[in-house]
Image 1: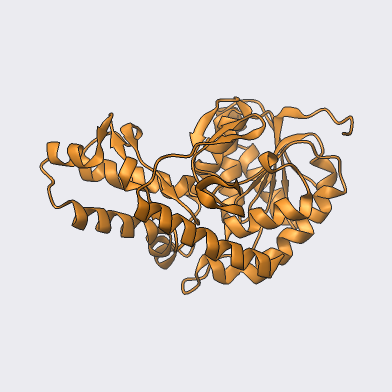
Image 2 (image 1 turned 90 degrees about the vertical axis):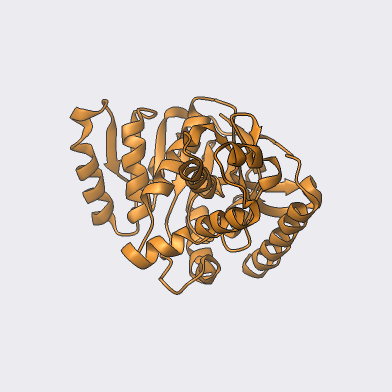
Length: 317
């Protein structure tokens, strides 16, 4: 490959809308990076965000934050792509495809002209389809092209469960899998709290109507983006924290298990489709997929989610 030396302390954010600027703000506070370049089709917007976020540096850690162009990305460890049209109140994530597929192709076209050796983290929606497009258009190895996937949905899931059970969200181990969208599923069959199967912990807390609670909790997780969009027109803080978490696992080479969106190679019988299942995330991106045990019903739902995404991805390549 080329002779670009990757600067592990440098991140690029492409797209400075609500999600991009919130992610940049979370990344500035994280202390993970010493250099961040913001890129947006509206250069003034990128400059304004860079100035605004930079003004907090004296309260954080030294860092160079600036608006730039694609020539500034070559040595970045991670490029976070949040550019795209926003989801409107009556739109599903899949409704956004046509607009955002075209935007993604043009961005990847620009990145490919440079000798970029780092990791692409796709955040724009629909994230699974756009990650697939970024992977195919870039020709990069699959481990280097990942999507934020269901990391946020899983965070929402753990939060709602933690509220229901009166326990620290970090002690809840449960995943949302599949599409980051309407066909996602909750992997209840292996959800645990502090090592106890979820239903046992529920009973410990005096909750016995499991089916009803499970359905209510899952629906609230699945619909939370719509609920937030209806109230404040967009969601951005939660996803910004998810972006920060994924970047942390990469930059610190943590080998954390996160349900990022990545290419399936036969796992759960899924091939040539990008969706979310737990994966070990390290400095090279996806180190390995973690094939957690699912019930037959869950596995069926995951396959259905995969088939839906595969069909749509093919139509938009």
